[in-house]
Structure formats: structure tokens, C-alpha cells
Image 1 (cartoon, rainbow, N blue to C red):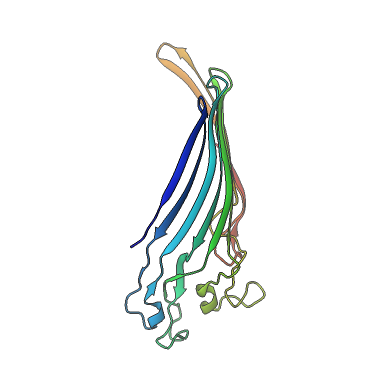
Image 2: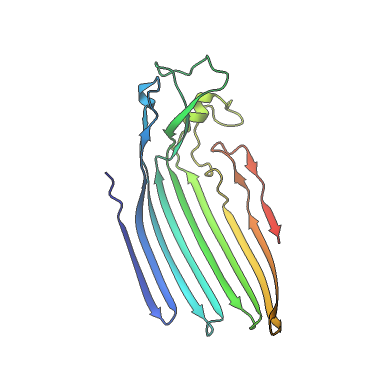
Length: 223
């Protein structure tokens, strides 16, 4: 049984302008790994988080500009991730060339971020849309990855042999994302319209796993 409350508010302080906020709890339930040899790995705990958000939505200049923004903070506990399957006595098996895995809990993450997005109708035919997001998601100081520690993939130089990942960036999460688009359209004839669009998207460097050794470099795509 889980209690997952949510409290939210919206204040329409002016016409087509509002401020909103929310506090909410989320849960991803625990589970069972089946009859694994090591009793301590036969189940994993629920993953929980509390998220706090404050933002604003606005229509300005007689409807020609839409501008939204928000800030948020998430406190995340007991993330579920892969762990090395241990022998019945709790030690690392030596009979497999490829180590088998089970589901386990990796520790906690703190997320701080902000977003802004909007669309500006410059003329009746020309518009620009834009968005920018910052997402600082890092493991708490006490976080340890059993997958890294037990698989012995770190030598203490490239990454900690203890599996300590505190302060590392959450894998597959880019700190910065951005987009800007320009759209032009107009009628040419009674039944024919002309339409053109240009989009630029950006994503900053992000790490592939919790050790923060392997990464995907930043990229920008123009369409």
C-alpha cells in the first residue's frame, strides 16, 4: 500500500496570466527477483520521490506572445537499477564469463531545474517558437552502485572501485536542452498555401552510465 498525495494551486492574477504550483509524491513499487541464490537479493525496495514545482503561464501583447516558465526540485530515493547476481553466500560468482544481473536499489538523486518556452507571432504569417530547459540531476553523496562495485569494472583510477557515485550526473540525462523554430506560411491561391519551417535543436553532453566515464557529446541538429 502506498500513499501518494498531490497538492496544487493556480492563481489567475490577471487576464490570461497565471501562477501555479504543486507538491506531489510518486512511487514505483518494489518487486521480486525470484529465487536467487542470495537471500538479500530476492526483492528490491520501492522507488519514491517528492517533486516541488512553481511556474507561470502568460499570453501577452494581445495574444501575439505566449510565454511560460517554471522551476522544480525533486528528491528521489532508492532508484531501481541492475545489480550483479551474487552467490548463496553473498560473494561474487566465479563460474560465469558474463555476470548475471538482478534488480536492486542504487541510492538517491536530487534534481534541480528550470524551463522556459513560448511562441511569438511576429506577423500574421511569420512566427517563432522557442524553449530552453536546465536539468541538474546528480546522485546524492552516499549513493553506491552495486553493479559497478561487484562487477569490479573500476580500478580506483578511472572510477572508484568501491562503486561510489555520489556527485555524478544521472545517466542518460542532458543538463541542457534547447529548441528554436521559425515558421512562415501564407496563402498563394484559393486552394494552395505556402508553408516553410526551420528548426534548430540542441542537447548538451550526457553520460551513458552512473560512473560518468562514457558519454555522448553535445549535439545540435538543424532541420
